[in-house]
Length: 289
Image 1 (cartoon, rainbow, N blue to C red):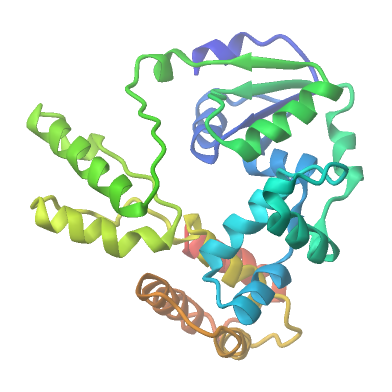
Image 2: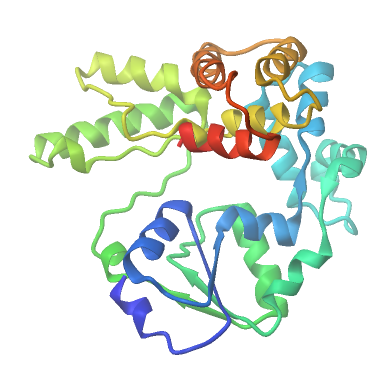
């Protein structure tokens, strides 16, 4: 992170992924800096759908929350002004759920007159690419690439199925272990609970152990959605709110059921605390991190 210490500017915005931002915050101690996750940049420039859209797709179409989120994210890539005949269904979905789209233009004010730095941006995410294009159309942007990342081995591939992706990942991890790379240096960041069962099945076949110790539950999109939904209800009793949400869901995958049980343990431990709703939410997020 030493290269970023040389920045001699005021009113700085540093955008990067969550893990990199944590390292920058803890190792540089920069002042007068606003940190933004790449997801926040996407939300600011493309918008984001409220949980109601996910829930409606789940109830009316039977989509899992992961698949519903993929569809809604893909619709964000479509232009409202150009109806592409190859994406008719996505365009119709975009029109149907635009009432649930959160896109506050006031969020763009923080970028005005700011020195905007994208830290380790490798153009590997379509949503982020589209958001960055809009960002660069309106504001000057500086791109930094850390020497630490330049010397790392990073693999980017596209797959048609989850099984093919996990199979390739298993081979890659096995190769690293065979080449005497310490297991503690191999980190798999999995934000999708749909992958869990398949990932464990392949790793068990390859006799590779998988530790969950370094994977905060709050990293899963499914868990974030549940936590956000809990605090929509007026009921201050977390257990009541949690049970209401579980009742509204039509089905869970096996991996999601496991996550639900873990969330329930955290919530059950907080029922007797005398805290307001925001304090409770902050504590729940902290305990799941």
